Every structure is written in C-alpha cells, then in structure tokens.
Image 1: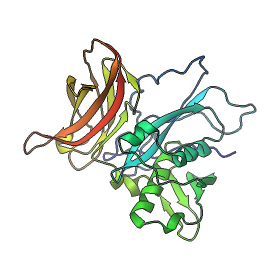
Image 2 (image 1 turned 120 degrees about the horizontal axis):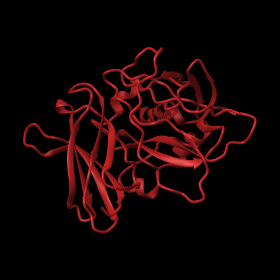
Image 3 (image 1 turned 180 degrees about the vertical axis):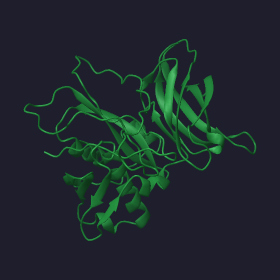
Length: 292
C-alpha cells in the first residue's frame, strides 16, 4: 500500500498551515477534536521554499506487521471563491493514507461546508502511484487535464496542498500528456489573504476559543470575533502574524466569550481596513458554541 507523508518548509512568507495527521487510540464514542497543538516549526535539513510549510512528523503509514487501529485526522484543501480553504476529517486509521485523502477530496465537502461555499474539483480516479525522494507521482483520470486552465490549476492545488501535509511529500508529479511537477510554493498565490486552520467548520468550541492560521494582511494584524446565532458579538480580540504586509505569516490567538446556553455561532477572522476601518478579507467559520 502507498503511504504518504508530507513535507515542505516554512520561510518568512509561509507560516504554518496546521498540524499533520496523527493517529489516536480508539474511543467508545466520537468526540470533537481537541485544541490544536502549537504551530510547529519547520524541520531542519531541508531547503526553504516560499509558500511551503513544515508540519510536525507523523507516524509511518505503511504496513507495520498489523492492521492500524484507532483513528487518523487528516487535513483536506477545498476551494472557495477561487481560493484554497482547509478543513479536517477524522476517519478510521488506514495504512493507505494517501488513498484516504484523495478519496475524501473526490467525495467533496460536507453539507455544512458546502453551505458556506466550499467545493472540490478533484474527481474520483486521482491516485498516487509511488513516492520517491519526496515526490508523489499522481495519475489522473481521462479528461482531468482538459478542464478550464484556472479550474485545472485549482484542482491540482487541492491535491498538492493535501498530499504535502505529510512529511515525506515535498512535491507532486502529475503524470500523463500534461505532466507537471508542483510544490506548495508554485500554488501559494491561490491562498486567500487570511487562512483559518483552527477551528474547523462545524467544530464544538468552548471559551476561550483558540484561533490559528496564516495571513498576509496590512501590518500583519488580524482581528477575531465570536458571534452567536443572531450575529451578536460575544467576544473580540486581535493578534499579529509573524510576517507583515507582503508576506505570509502564522498567527494564533485565544478569544473568550460569554454565552448562557450552548448553541450555534461563528468565528470570524478579518483585517481592519486601513482606509475606513471596515472588516476586509472576512473568513467566517460556523461552529457550535458551548455555554460559557
């Protein structure tokens, strides 16, 4: 079976784009993911690449003499408004993690994710054939490369950003008539000004809420607010990314809120306009708020 592990390295323009999959012990009932781990630093010994990242290592996902147990959480990259957007899935552990993530991309967003505009351009039949020297070779179904050039680039970006979450994959080679080798850096322009990797869509959160991701915004400053179902502001805060205007950096903040009864709500992350103070580049993540 094929096993894929990601790679890439952070430089001053990239920031970290979320934790790599980690296998966890089986639980009697499904539970919401816990708070995200601190943003990992890039591994040493690799050349830095703009737009690339270096998530923490994950356990091997190849055959180990026995069937895997428990679950694995993987990061998936979908599209929204012509840009890339991450989310996560927790699934039964498997030695064929590359097959799992590509199948999830082909399945597409959940109803809740689709409701806020997430899409997929990755069809069934995209598969990894081998991994060698940090390169994952990928075959695609007939007709994949005949799509509109912009949509094709977005579809390839979904595959590249999803597969390179694993430490042993630094680039993806698409084989066939239109063969091309791509890294995260080659597709970094498809990221929106603000990326939110934590919390993920539909997650149950409690006060204070940890909010993390990357941004390339004015003076590196991002503002966070917690909203209830009616759109009332329950809590606000701001933080700065570790790289300013013109480069992408990672950010992390915790924002508290008060709410008498649990219910649905949202986390919004945005830039305050330097012209008139209005919210810009707003990213809205629907969540389930615990009482606080």
